[in-house]
Length: 295
Image 1 (cartoon, one colour):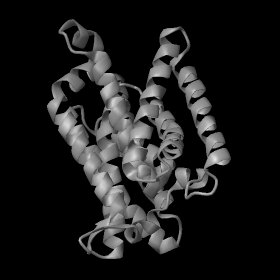
Image 2: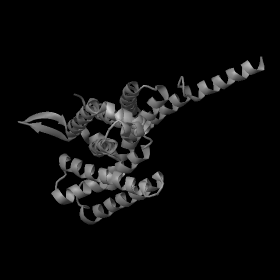
Image 3: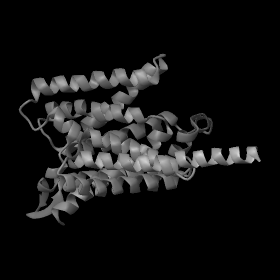
Image 4: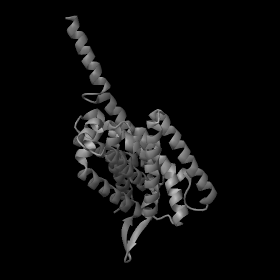
């Protein structure tokens, strides 16, 4: 594959993985928790490095998953103790992220880990960091990691689709019919954590947050059916990756930043032109009512 194709494939895998998880976060009104976990994953990455003295992906995944679950747990504890949800997210997010930055500065300043890299990523170098097996180049590490995480997410969603769907739309009914709502909640947080850290190195936290929230929000404006929403969200993620790459090529700017901009642009168009929930359709509906009333 060409250099260009590997970058677009990497961005598309991020868009699909984040798009799947993002739908459930938007439905559960937990979009800001995605932002929190995408940043506190830095603490998990630094902790994993300090314990293992290695930057291998598997250690990073384990560290980020643990910290991601801890983030969700602390937010849940504070919220159930009377702290407002957004305030609880803000307290936990800033505290754990700041701790990660301090540990990074104190003990890991001489390794290929820094806060700018964690926030912005560097998808440009993805095609050069490859996996070799018996002397054969198997492609970029990032593609293998993102592909593995996408496979895990698809398996979990397939196995627990009904439980995730019911607990996302109606948690009280899910509890009444015996669905382990808390288990499903932490299962989704675990998926969010591994998706975040798998995307971290190549595209950075900013694009991860954009891909988690914006494609799902776009799909939410276009359909009321969950399965269709999942497909639209993934498609928007892929389209944003392709558009973003060519925008970056045209203007010679950051690829990850261009992808984030592209997904925002797609959302803006949908927000105005959505057949059911768009501003234009709402304006036309109000105008139609006024015309009827005036007759």
